[in-house]
Amino acid sequence: MVLVSPPLAAQDATPRAARSWSDYRLGQFISSRGRTPGDILSLDNNGDILLACRGGCSPESLAAAGVPALASQLELLRGWALLVEEDGGLRAGIPILDRTQTELLDRRAAALLVPPVCPPATAQQPARSWSDYRLGQFIASRSLTPGEVLALDNNGDILLACRDGCSREGLLAEGVPALESQLELLRGWALLIDEEAGMRTAIPIVDGERSELLEQRTAALAAEIAGAVAGDVAELVGALKAEGWSGHAFAVVFSYVLDGGVWGFFDEMSLIARRNVARRGAPWGGEVWAYASAREREPRTSTLRRGSTTVKVSWVEPLEPLIDALMTGPLSLQTLFADFLEQGQPASPEMRAKLMEYGIVTSEQRLSVPVIEQSREDRINQLCDRLATRVAEAVIAGIDRPALVAELGLESESQALVIAYHEVMWRLIDRLVATEAIELPVAIADPERARPADLGQLVVMARPPQASLPAGDGDGDGDEDEGEGEGGS
Image 1 (cartoon, rainbow, N blue to C red):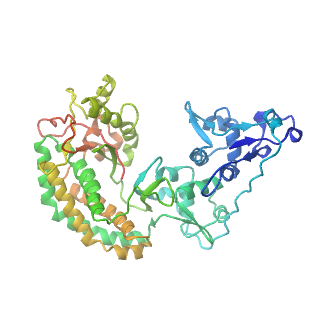
Image 2 (image 1 turned 135 degrees about the horizontal axis):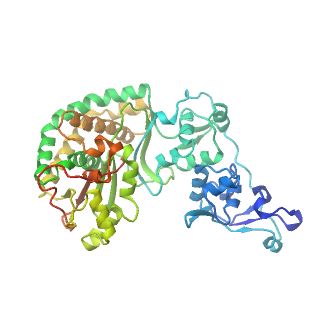
Image 3 (image 1 turned 180 degrees about the vertical axis):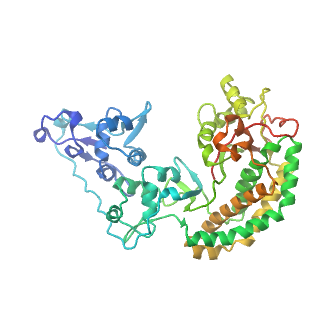
Protein backbone atom coordinates (compact mmCIF):
# COMPACT_ATOMS: atom_id res chain seq x y z
CA MET A 1 0.00 0.00 0.00
CA VAL A 2 1.46 3.41 -0.96
CA LEU A 3 0.28 6.95 -0.55
CA VAL A 4 0.63 9.12 -3.62
CA SER A 5 -0.06 12.75 -4.52
CA PRO A 6 -1.73 13.93 -7.76
CA PRO A 7 0.47 14.40 -10.90
CA LEU A 8 2.82 17.35 -10.87
CA ALA A 9 0.65 19.43 -13.18
CA ALA A 10 -2.16 19.43 -10.68
CA GLN A 11 0.07 20.58 -7.85
CA ASP A 12 0.80 24.08 -6.71
CA ALA A 13 3.81 25.43 -4.89
CA THR A 14 2.34 24.81 -1.45
CA PRO A 15 5.11 23.67 0.93
CA ARG A 16 4.88 20.00 1.90
CA ALA A 17 4.27 20.67 5.61
CA ALA A 18 1.18 22.75 4.86
CA ARG A 19 -0.49 20.26 2.48
CA SER A 20 -3.83 18.67 3.19
CA TRP A 21 -4.96 15.05 2.96
CA SER A 22 -7.31 16.22 0.20
CA ASP A 23 -4.22 16.67 -2.04
CA TYR A 24 -3.47 12.94 -1.83
CA ARG A 25 -4.90 9.69 -3.09
CA LEU A 26 -4.35 6.25 -1.67
CA GLY A 27 -3.09 3.22 -3.57
CA GLN A 28 -4.20 -0.10 -2.03
CA PHE A 29 -3.17 -3.60 -3.05
CA ILE A 30 -4.66 -5.44 -0.09
CA SER A 31 -6.93 -8.14 1.24
CA SER A 32 -9.45 -7.09 3.88
CA ARG A 33 -12.39 -8.77 5.59
CA GLY A 34 -14.33 -5.55 6.07
CA ARG A 35 -13.28 -1.93 5.94
CA THR A 36 -10.07 -0.83 4.24
CA PRO A 37 -7.25 1.48 5.35
CA GLY A 38 -8.69 4.04 2.94
CA ASP A 39 -12.00 3.97 4.80
CA ILE A 40 -10.19 4.61 8.07
CA LEU A 41 -8.11 7.48 6.66
CA SER A 42 -11.26 9.05 5.20
CA LEU A 43 -12.83 9.35 8.63
CA ASP A 44 -12.70 12.77 10.27
CA ASN A 45 -9.19 14.26 9.92
CA ASN A 46 -7.31 10.95 10.15
CA GLY A 47 -5.54 11.57 6.83
CA ASP A 48 -4.16 14.89 8.06
CA ILE A 49 -2.94 13.17 11.23
CA LEU A 50 -1.11 10.60 9.07
CA LEU A 51 0.55 13.32 7.00
CA ALA A 52 1.59 15.24 10.11
CA CYS A 53 3.27 12.08 11.44
CA ARG A 54 5.27 11.24 8.31
CA GLY A 55 8.52 12.34 9.99
CA GLY A 56 7.44 11.49 13.54
CA CYS A 57 4.95 13.08 15.90
CA SER A 58 3.39 13.03 19.35
CA PRO A 59 -0.01 14.17 20.66
CA GLU A 60 1.69 17.34 21.84
CA SER A 61 3.35 18.09 18.50
CA LEU A 62 0.10 17.45 16.64
CA ALA A 63 -1.70 19.94 18.88
CA ALA A 64 1.09 22.48 18.38
CA ALA A 65 0.82 22.02 14.60
CA GLY A 66 -2.92 22.69 14.71
CA VAL A 67 -3.88 19.11 13.85
CA PRO A 68 -6.58 17.99 16.35
CA ALA A 69 -6.23 14.34 17.32
CA LEU A 70 -8.31 12.46 19.86
CA ALA A 71 -6.80 9.50 21.67
CA SER A 72 -9.44 7.34 19.94
CA GLN A 73 -8.17 8.41 16.53
CA LEU A 74 -4.54 7.61 17.39
CA GLU A 75 -5.57 4.22 18.80
CA LEU A 76 -7.62 3.45 15.68
CA LEU A 77 -4.72 4.38 13.38
CA ARG A 78 -2.30 2.27 15.46
CA GLY A 79 -4.69 -0.66 15.39
CA TRP A 80 -4.83 -0.42 11.60
CA ALA A 81 -0.99 -0.22 11.32
CA LEU A 82 -1.28 3.24 9.80
CA LEU A 83 0.67 4.73 12.69
CA VAL A 84 3.53 2.92 14.40
CA GLU A 85 5.23 3.64 17.72
CA GLU A 86 8.86 4.63 17.39
CA ASP A 87 11.36 6.09 19.88
CA GLY A 88 8.64 7.20 22.27
CA GLY A 89 6.53 8.82 19.56
CA LEU A 90 4.47 7.97 16.49
CA ARG A 91 5.30 7.73 12.81
CA ALA A 92 3.27 7.12 9.64
CA GLY A 93 3.22 3.38 9.01
CA ILE A 94 2.90 3.53 5.20
CA PRO A 95 5.07 5.13 2.47
CA ILE A 96 4.14 8.65 1.37
CA LEU A 97 5.19 9.56 -2.17
CA ASP A 98 4.96 13.09 -3.44
CA ARG A 99 6.24 15.65 -5.94
CA THR A 100 9.50 14.05 -7.11
CA GLN A 101 8.35 10.45 -6.76
CA THR A 102 5.01 11.03 -8.50
CA GLU A 103 6.76 11.99 -11.75
CA LEU A 104 7.39 8.26 -12.13
CA LEU A 105 3.71 7.32 -11.84
CA ASP A 106 1.42 7.06 -14.90
CA ARG A 107 -1.90 6.81 -13.24
CA ARG A 108 -3.77 7.63 -10.05
CA ALA A 109 -5.48 5.38 -7.53
CA ALA A 110 -9.24 5.78 -7.37
CA ALA A 111 -10.43 8.06 -4.56
CA LEU A 112 -12.22 6.21 -1.79
CA LEU A 113 -15.73 7.13 -0.71
CA VAL A 114 -16.54 8.12 2.83
CA PRO A 115 -18.84 5.45 4.33
CA PRO A 116 -22.50 6.54 4.59
CA VAL A 117 -23.77 7.85 7.90
CA CYS A 118 -26.19 5.50 9.65
CA PRO A 119 -29.85 6.49 9.27
CA PRO A 120 -31.51 8.17 12.23
CA ALA A 121 -32.81 5.86 14.94
CA THR A 122 -35.93 6.36 17.00
CA ALA A 123 -36.04 6.45 20.80
CA GLN A 124 -32.98 7.44 22.82
CA GLN A 125 -32.31 6.56 26.46
CA PRO A 126 -32.42 9.61 28.75
CA ALA A 127 -28.88 10.94 28.94
CA ARG A 128 -26.64 9.87 31.79
CA SER A 129 -22.92 10.35 32.01
CA TRP A 130 -20.46 7.49 31.64
CA SER A 131 -18.97 8.64 34.95
CA ASP A 132 -22.14 7.34 36.64
CA TYR A 133 -21.27 3.79 35.58
CA ARG A 134 -18.67 1.15 36.20
CA LEU A 135 -17.50 -1.48 33.78
CA GLY A 136 -17.44 -5.18 34.60
CA GLN A 137 -14.85 -7.11 32.61
CA PHE A 138 -14.41 -10.89 32.69
CA ILE A 139 -12.12 -11.16 29.71
CA ALA A 140 -8.91 -12.20 28.07
CA SER A 141 -7.39 -9.49 25.88
CA ARG A 142 -4.41 -9.36 23.54
CA SER A 143 -3.72 -5.66 23.97
CA LEU A 144 -5.90 -2.96 25.48
CA THR A 145 -9.09 -3.82 27.30
CA PRO A 146 -12.61 -2.66 26.37
CA GLY A 147 -12.51 -0.49 29.49
CA GLU A 148 -9.45 1.36 28.21
CA VAL A 149 -11.10 1.95 24.83
CA LEU A 150 -14.26 3.28 26.50
CA ALA A 151 -12.13 5.59 28.66
CA LEU A 152 -10.77 7.34 25.56
CA ASP A 153 -12.35 10.71 24.76
CA ASN A 154 -16.15 10.48 25.19
CA ASN A 155 -16.48 6.88 23.96
CA GLY A 156 -18.34 5.81 27.09
CA ASP A 157 -20.99 8.48 26.58
CA ILE A 158 -21.40 7.36 22.96
CA LEU A 159 -21.95 3.81 24.18
CA LEU A 160 -24.64 4.92 26.63
CA ALA A 161 -26.40 7.06 24.03
CA CYS A 162 -26.62 4.07 21.67
CA ARG A 163 -28.15 1.60 24.12
CA ASP A 164 -31.55 1.75 22.36
CA GLY A 165 -30.19 2.52 18.91
CA CYS A 166 -28.55 5.59 17.41
CA SER A 167 -27.04 7.21 14.35
CA ARG A 168 -24.24 9.71 14.14
CA GLU A 169 -26.74 12.41 13.28
CA GLY A 170 -28.87 11.41 16.26
CA LEU A 171 -25.85 11.53 18.54
CA LEU A 172 -24.96 15.03 17.41
CA ALA A 173 -28.58 16.14 17.85
CA GLU A 174 -28.50 14.82 21.42
CA GLY A 175 -25.32 16.78 22.15
CA VAL A 176 -23.04 13.74 22.08
CA PRO A 177 -20.11 14.54 19.75
CA ALA A 178 -18.94 11.48 17.81
CA LEU A 179 -16.32 11.23 15.10
CA GLU A 180 -16.59 8.41 12.57
CA SER A 181 -13.21 7.24 13.90
CA GLN A 182 -14.69 6.74 17.34
CA LEU A 183 -17.65 4.80 15.95
CA GLU A 184 -15.33 2.62 13.88
CA LEU A 185 -13.12 1.93 16.90
CA LEU A 186 -16.14 0.94 18.99
CA ARG A 187 -17.39 -1.34 16.20
CA GLY A 188 -13.98 -2.97 15.85
CA TRP A 189 -13.94 -3.65 19.60
CA ALA A 190 -17.45 -5.24 19.44
CA LEU A 191 -18.85 -2.48 21.66
CA LEU A 192 -21.18 -1.11 18.98
CA ILE A 193 -22.95 -3.20 16.34
CA ASP A 194 -24.66 -2.13 13.13
CA GLU A 195 -28.34 -2.84 12.64
CA GLU A 196 -30.80 -1.99 9.87
CA ALA A 197 -31.94 1.15 11.65
CA GLY A 198 -28.49 2.32 12.77
CA MET A 199 -26.13 1.33 15.57
CA ARG A 200 -26.72 -0.20 18.97
CA THR A 201 -24.65 -0.80 22.08
CA ALA A 202 -23.39 -4.39 22.02
CA ILE A 203 -22.89 -4.97 25.76
CA PRO A 204 -25.46 -5.13 28.58
CA ILE A 205 -26.13 -1.99 30.62
CA VAL A 206 -27.51 -2.79 34.05
CA ASP A 207 -29.15 0.14 35.83
CA GLY A 208 -32.52 1.33 37.14
CA GLU A 209 -35.03 -1.52 37.37
CA ARG A 210 -32.46 -3.99 36.11
CA SER A 211 -30.16 -3.12 39.02
CA GLU A 212 -33.02 -3.67 41.44
CA LEU A 213 -33.83 -7.06 39.91
CA LEU A 214 -30.18 -8.11 40.08
CA GLU A 215 -29.96 -7.02 43.72
CA GLN A 216 -33.07 -9.03 44.58
CA ARG A 217 -31.53 -12.14 43.10
CA THR A 218 -28.05 -11.77 44.65
CA ALA A 219 -28.17 -9.95 48.03
CA ALA A 220 -29.98 -12.63 50.03
CA LEU A 221 -27.96 -15.38 48.35
CA ALA A 222 -24.66 -13.73 49.31
CA ALA A 223 -25.79 -13.44 52.95
CA GLU A 224 -26.88 -17.07 52.96
CA ILE A 225 -23.55 -18.24 51.53
CA ALA A 226 -21.57 -16.14 54.04
CA GLY A 227 -23.29 -17.93 56.90
CA ALA A 228 -22.86 -21.35 55.32
CA VAL A 229 -19.10 -21.01 54.71
CA ALA A 230 -18.17 -19.14 57.90
CA GLY A 231 -16.52 -22.25 59.33
CA ASP A 232 -14.56 -22.92 56.13
CA VAL A 233 -13.29 -19.35 56.05
CA ALA A 234 -12.23 -19.49 59.72
CA GLU A 235 -10.33 -22.72 59.11
CA LEU A 236 -8.54 -21.25 56.07
CA VAL A 237 -7.63 -18.04 57.91
CA GLY A 238 -6.26 -20.14 60.76
CA ALA A 239 -4.12 -22.20 58.39
CA LEU A 240 -2.74 -19.02 56.80
CA LYS A 241 -1.88 -17.64 60.24
CA ALA A 242 -0.05 -20.83 61.12
CA GLU A 243 2.13 -20.31 58.01
CA GLY A 244 2.80 -16.69 58.91
CA TRP A 245 0.47 -15.34 56.21
CA SER A 246 -2.39 -13.90 58.22
CA GLY A 247 -1.97 -10.52 56.50
CA HIS A 248 -2.73 -12.19 53.18
CA ALA A 249 -6.10 -13.70 54.17
CA PHE A 250 -8.08 -11.16 52.12
CA ALA A 251 -6.03 -11.77 48.97
CA VAL A 252 -6.26 -15.55 49.34
CA VAL A 253 -10.02 -15.63 50.03
CA PHE A 254 -10.99 -12.98 47.50
CA SER A 255 -8.55 -13.27 44.59
CA TYR A 256 -7.45 -16.90 44.83
CA VAL A 257 -10.76 -18.49 45.90
CA LEU A 258 -13.75 -16.25 45.08
CA ASP A 259 -12.25 -14.56 42.01
CA GLY A 260 -10.23 -17.60 40.99
CA GLY A 261 -11.22 -21.06 42.14
CA VAL A 262 -14.96 -20.47 41.80
CA TRP A 263 -14.52 -19.43 38.17
CA GLY A 264 -12.45 -22.58 37.64
CA PHE A 265 -15.37 -24.64 38.96
CA PHE A 266 -17.77 -22.90 36.56
CA ASP A 267 -15.31 -23.55 33.72
CA GLU A 268 -15.09 -27.25 34.51
CA MET A 269 -18.89 -27.43 34.49
CA SER A 270 -18.94 -25.63 31.09
CA LEU A 271 -21.23 -22.95 32.55
CA ILE A 272 -19.35 -19.93 31.19
CA ALA A 273 -18.14 -19.09 27.69
CA ARG A 274 -14.45 -19.42 26.91
CA ARG A 275 -12.54 -16.18 27.24
CA ASN A 276 -9.91 -17.15 24.64
CA VAL A 277 -12.49 -16.97 21.84
CA ALA A 278 -12.63 -13.53 20.21
CA ARG A 279 -15.96 -11.75 20.46
CA ARG A 280 -17.23 -10.77 16.98
CA GLY A 281 -13.66 -10.51 15.73
CA ALA A 282 -12.59 -8.10 18.50
CA PRO A 283 -9.19 -8.41 20.24
CA TRP A 284 -10.85 -9.74 23.40
CA GLY A 285 -13.06 -12.59 24.52
CA GLY A 286 -15.36 -13.03 27.50
CA GLU A 287 -18.02 -10.78 29.00
CA VAL A 288 -18.19 -7.01 29.45
CA TRP A 289 -21.07 -5.05 30.94
CA ALA A 290 -21.74 -1.58 32.28
CA TYR A 291 -23.59 -1.11 35.54
CA ALA A 292 -24.60 1.55 38.04
CA SER A 293 -23.41 0.78 41.56
CA ALA A 294 -23.85 2.47 44.90
CA ARG A 295 -20.85 0.66 46.39
CA GLU A 296 -17.96 2.94 47.23
CA ARG A 297 -15.43 0.57 45.66
CA GLU A 298 -15.18 -3.01 44.51
CA PRO A 299 -12.12 -5.24 44.76
CA ARG A 300 -10.66 -6.67 41.57
CA THR A 301 -8.01 -9.19 40.67
CA SER A 302 -5.15 -9.04 38.20
CA THR A 303 -3.53 -12.30 37.15
CA LEU A 304 -0.10 -13.06 35.72
CA ARG A 305 0.78 -16.50 34.38
CA ARG A 306 4.10 -17.96 33.32
CA GLY A 307 3.88 -21.61 32.46
CA SER A 308 1.91 -23.30 35.24
CA THR A 309 2.80 -20.69 37.87
CA THR A 310 0.27 -17.95 38.65
CA VAL A 311 0.34 -14.68 40.55
CA LYS A 312 -2.93 -13.05 41.65
CA VAL A 313 -3.07 -9.51 42.98
CA SER A 314 -6.06 -7.90 44.70
CA TRP A 315 -6.72 -4.21 44.17
CA VAL A 316 -9.27 -1.41 44.20
CA GLU A 317 -9.44 1.51 41.78
CA PRO A 318 -7.54 4.14 43.82
CA LEU A 319 -4.55 1.74 43.90
CA GLU A 320 -4.26 1.61 40.12
CA PRO A 321 -1.09 3.75 39.77
CA LEU A 322 0.74 1.66 42.38
CA ILE A 323 -0.55 -1.56 40.84
CA ASP A 324 0.53 -0.55 37.33
CA ALA A 325 4.07 0.01 38.62
CA LEU A 326 4.00 -3.36 40.39
CA MET A 327 2.69 -5.37 37.44
CA THR A 328 4.62 -3.95 34.48
CA GLY A 329 8.00 -2.53 33.61
CA PRO A 330 11.59 -3.64 34.14
CA LEU A 331 11.21 -3.90 37.93
CA SER A 332 7.90 -5.73 38.22
CA LEU A 333 6.19 -9.03 38.92
CA GLN A 334 6.66 -9.91 35.27
CA THR A 335 10.43 -9.80 35.74
CA LEU A 336 10.11 -11.58 39.08
CA PHE A 337 8.59 -14.54 37.29
CA ALA A 338 11.46 -14.86 34.85
CA ASP A 339 14.17 -14.40 37.47
CA PHE A 340 12.73 -16.84 40.02
CA LEU A 341 11.86 -19.52 37.50
CA GLU A 342 15.22 -19.31 35.75
CA GLN A 343 17.63 -18.40 38.57
CA GLY A 344 15.82 -18.90 41.87
CA GLN A 345 16.16 -15.24 42.90
CA PRO A 346 15.92 -11.72 41.48
CA ALA A 347 18.83 -11.26 39.07
CA SER A 348 19.69 -7.62 39.69
CA PRO A 349 20.30 -5.61 42.88
CA GLU A 350 17.70 -3.10 41.65
CA MET A 351 15.09 -5.85 41.32
CA ARG A 352 15.89 -7.21 44.78
CA ALA A 353 15.58 -3.75 46.31
CA LYS A 354 12.29 -3.05 44.53
CA LEU A 355 10.69 -6.34 45.65
CA MET A 356 11.87 -5.78 49.21
CA GLU A 357 10.31 -2.31 49.05
CA TYR A 358 7.02 -3.95 48.01
CA GLY A 359 7.23 -6.54 50.79
CA ILE A 360 7.32 -9.45 48.34
CA VAL A 361 10.88 -10.61 48.97
CA THR A 362 12.77 -10.80 52.27
CA SER A 363 16.32 -9.59 52.88
CA GLU A 364 17.36 -13.25 52.41
CA GLN A 365 15.82 -13.15 48.89
CA ARG A 366 12.96 -15.48 49.73
CA LEU A 367 9.33 -14.85 48.91
CA SER A 368 7.32 -13.42 51.79
CA VAL A 369 3.95 -13.88 50.06
CA PRO A 370 1.86 -17.08 50.13
CA VAL A 371 2.97 -19.70 47.62
CA ILE A 372 0.16 -22.25 47.37
CA GLU A 373 1.20 -25.62 46.01
CA GLN A 374 -1.64 -26.95 43.90
CA SER A 375 -1.59 -30.50 45.17
CA ARG A 376 -3.90 -32.60 47.32
CA GLU A 377 -1.23 -32.74 50.01
CA ASP A 378 -1.07 -28.96 50.48
CA ARG A 379 -3.33 -28.04 53.40
CA ILE A 380 -4.06 -24.49 52.27
CA ASN A 381 -4.80 -25.68 48.73
CA GLN A 382 -7.25 -28.25 50.16
CA LEU A 383 -9.07 -25.59 52.17
CA CYS A 384 -9.19 -23.19 49.20
CA ASP A 385 -10.62 -25.89 46.93
CA ARG A 386 -13.25 -26.84 49.47
CA LEU A 387 -14.34 -23.22 49.97
CA ALA A 388 -14.46 -22.57 46.21
CA THR A 389 -16.56 -25.69 45.62
CA ARG A 390 -19.10 -24.81 48.30
CA VAL A 391 -19.49 -21.26 47.06
CA ALA A 392 -19.81 -22.36 43.43
CA GLU A 393 -22.41 -25.02 44.21
CA ALA A 394 -24.47 -22.54 46.22
CA VAL A 395 -24.36 -20.00 43.39
CA ILE A 396 -25.38 -22.57 40.77
CA ALA A 397 -28.31 -23.66 42.92
CA GLY A 398 -29.31 -20.14 43.93
CA ILE A 399 -29.15 -18.18 40.65
CA ASP A 400 -32.04 -18.62 38.20
CA ARG A 401 -30.01 -18.01 35.06
CA PRO A 402 -32.83 -18.29 32.48
CA ALA A 403 -34.88 -15.76 34.47
CA LEU A 404 -31.95 -13.32 34.57
CA VAL A 405 -31.46 -13.62 30.81
CA ALA A 406 -35.07 -12.50 30.32
CA GLU A 407 -35.10 -9.83 33.05
CA LEU A 408 -31.81 -8.15 32.11
CA GLY A 409 -32.11 -8.61 28.34
CA LEU A 410 -28.95 -10.74 28.16
CA GLU A 411 -27.61 -12.95 25.39
CA SER A 412 -26.94 -16.18 27.28
CA GLU A 413 -27.00 -18.01 30.60
CA SER A 414 -23.20 -17.73 30.64
CA GLN A 415 -23.51 -13.94 30.57
CA ALA A 416 -26.15 -14.09 33.32
CA LEU A 417 -23.90 -16.21 35.55
CA VAL A 418 -20.86 -13.97 35.06
CA ILE A 419 -22.80 -10.79 35.90
CA ALA A 420 -24.74 -12.31 38.82
CA TYR A 421 -21.74 -14.01 40.39
CA HIS A 422 -19.73 -10.78 40.39
CA GLU A 423 -22.52 -9.24 42.48
CA VAL A 424 -22.58 -12.26 44.80
CA MET A 425 -18.77 -12.24 45.08
CA TRP A 426 -18.58 -8.57 46.04
CA ARG A 427 -21.44 -8.84 48.53
CA LEU A 428 -19.95 -11.99 50.02
CA ILE A 429 -16.51 -10.49 50.62
CA ASP A 430 -18.16 -7.37 52.09
CA ARG A 431 -20.08 -9.53 54.55
CA LEU A 432 -17.01 -11.56 55.52
CA VAL A 433 -15.17 -8.31 56.29
CA ALA A 434 -18.17 -6.81 58.13
CA THR A 435 -18.41 -9.91 60.38
CA GLU A 436 -14.64 -9.75 60.98
CA ALA A 437 -14.12 -13.18 59.47
CA ILE A 438 -11.43 -11.49 57.33
CA GLU A 439 -9.44 -8.36 58.05
CA LEU A 440 -8.97 -5.77 55.32
CA PRO A 441 -5.35 -5.21 54.28
CA VAL A 442 -4.05 -1.69 54.83
CA ALA A 443 -3.94 -0.93 51.11
CA ILE A 444 -7.60 -1.92 50.59
CA ALA A 445 -8.85 -0.27 53.77
CA ASP A 446 -7.24 3.09 52.98
CA PRO A 447 -6.00 3.00 49.37
CA GLU A 448 -5.48 6.76 49.12
CA ARG A 449 -2.75 6.52 51.77
CA ALA A 450 -1.28 3.19 50.65
CA ARG A 451 2.48 2.92 50.24
CA PRO A 452 4.37 0.49 47.99
CA ALA A 453 5.23 -1.50 51.12
CA ASP A 454 1.52 -2.15 51.70
CA LEU A 455 1.08 -4.00 48.42
CA GLY A 456 2.70 -7.30 49.38
CA GLN A 457 -0.38 -8.32 51.38
CA LEU A 458 -2.36 -8.26 48.13
CA VAL A 459 -0.16 -10.80 46.31
CA VAL A 460 -0.70 -14.58 46.17
CA MET A 461 1.29 -17.10 44.14
CA ALA A 462 0.28 -20.62 43.12
CA ARG A 463 2.43 -23.28 41.53
CA PRO A 464 2.16 -26.94 40.51
CA PRO A 465 3.99 -29.44 42.74
CA GLN A 466 7.00 -29.66 40.43
CA ALA A 467 7.66 -25.90 40.31
CA SER A 468 10.57 -24.66 42.42
CA LEU A 469 10.00 -21.13 43.58
CA PRO A 470 11.93 -20.26 46.76
CA ALA A 471 8.91 -19.82 49.01
CA GLY A 472 9.52 -17.81 52.14
CA ASP A 473 8.72 -18.39 55.78
CA GLY A 474 5.90 -15.85 56.04
CA ASP A 475 6.33 -13.14 58.61
CA GLY A 476 7.48 -15.60 61.24
CA ASP A 477 5.10 -14.70 64.06
CA GLY A 478 1.70 -15.08 62.46
CA ASP A 479 1.08 -11.32 62.44
CA GLU A 480 0.49 -9.17 59.41
CA ASP A 481 3.45 -8.45 57.23
CA GLU A 482 3.77 -5.44 55.01
CA GLY A 483 3.02 -5.83 51.31
CA GLU A 484 1.61 -4.54 48.06
CA GLY A 485 -1.09 -5.31 45.53
CA GLU A 486 -2.98 -4.68 42.30
CA GLY A 487 -5.51 -6.37 40.02
CA GLY A 488 -8.80 -6.43 38.05
CA SER A 489 -11.32 -9.13 37.28
